[in-house]
Length: 120
Image (cartoon, rainbow, N blue to C red; front, side, top):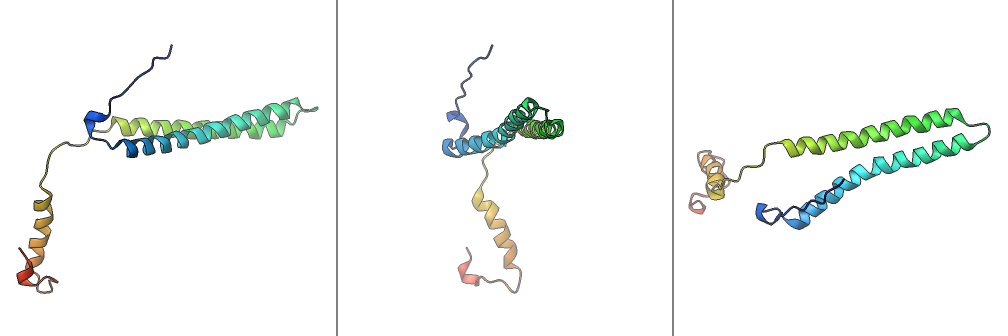
């Protein structure tokens, strides 16, 4: 029995538009090989219905189904592994200090592109 799940994304600071775009891309990436597998299955059925059945074509279609289903499984596995990774840190950091350190290091070089009065 399937249960409907709902997730409240508002509290975790994810831009809803970018999250939805990412989700749409993932769904498309999984749907493509599954759709291809279905098409190959339909083709295999058609080749089996022929008199005599085209067994070579059926074998090719079945091989393509396996490849596409494996590809969909790999995509799902990759998504699952990404979800298991450590969540991103939620620490605050001082961007000004982060940027200021490399600029200070630049002051000691004689070929600095900044004039001494432009630095603060």
